[in-house]
Length: 259
Image (cartoon, rainbow, N blue to C red; front, side, top):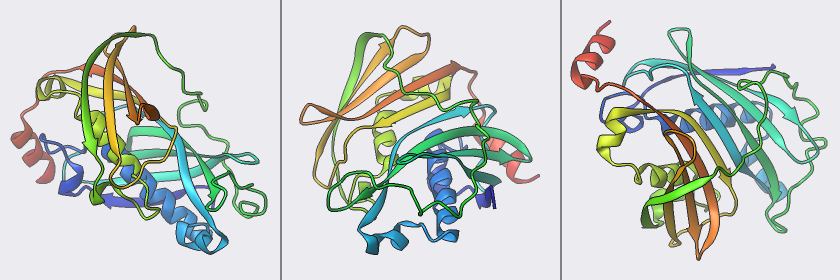
């Protein structure tokens, strides 16, 4: 099996105030699809835990190509291994609605030894999984720090139980929730997210105090978000937006759901 495909119904906890799929919820569906794929190959988190191993994601990139679907609509998520080196695992993904791609991206992951916290070799673990050399974004790009112009705002958050995943670390989506709080509602109602690049630098835990600072960059409608713990960077995010007209959230959703 070179690609794994899973269908989902968009639930209310994944939608925004316009009843559409939240852009940052795309990572939730991708990660669930990828986890199911690895489960089929006996490489899920619970499969490798008894070997003192666990998964961590180093970063990902997403591009949004079309309007996001509404609550209760069905989407198709495809995930595949595009490249496996000695230590790095690259997975690509596409999300479709009515047969049309609305988001695509890639992710870089490692398998770590829980005792040493160092990357474990992929040798033998992935020998039976076929890679598909198909890159949803054309290539696997390296995260590059943009030119920063000025600080816009900052928010502080103390992690709680809702932020913690099964590895007892702050989950990936919680970092993006924090990033989203740096944009006010007027901006989010008049702009749509088109690109998202994330680099995870360190792990965070329950009770940690995280500070997210948002900066304007030299590129139009592009922002850099740095999340720190004790003044050390744990996560860095680049977002690129596009101006749009406001939508009639109730009418549009009713039309879509009643089709």
